[in-house]
Length: 200
Ligand code: GLN
Image 1: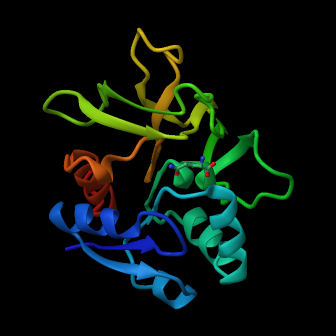
Image 2: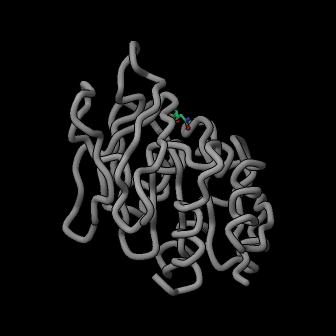
């Protein structure tokens, strides 16, 4: 059984833990560097990316986490977590911290005011069994990706943001703009647990 750490500085930690445990992982919360040594993967929950970035620095986790990600620690970031993993962030605040573990440019709060929260069904590559119900809450999108990044899902036609990438993977690093932890659909968490096990 893999042990997955859920970064527990802010955001929907409990929902991710429940989804990961239901998907077959053991979970611990991560607030200190030594806890990073116990995990086979880490989840960065949704919340507010600039706040979590600041807290990562306050808790002395920024450099330790960057180092482990560079060394190949599997990671899954949802929404704010995607922003934190990204190498480049648009529409953020000056000095915002990030982990630089995913070769993408993300745009914060990309969907604009009217539709800044919405739901849609998405086909996610690597997730079998039909579309995933995707809940977007003041979500980022992926504006561009580097050569090693695979786009797993894009916003379907009929939405003003049609074609925008909202799920990506680069090796053991997975990120979604949306929040599968609140829908009861475990498939995205299962995918990540498999990645952390080295099976996918
Ligand atoms: N808008 C938030 C941010 O910029 C992300 C929202 C979320 O995680 N639901 O960090």
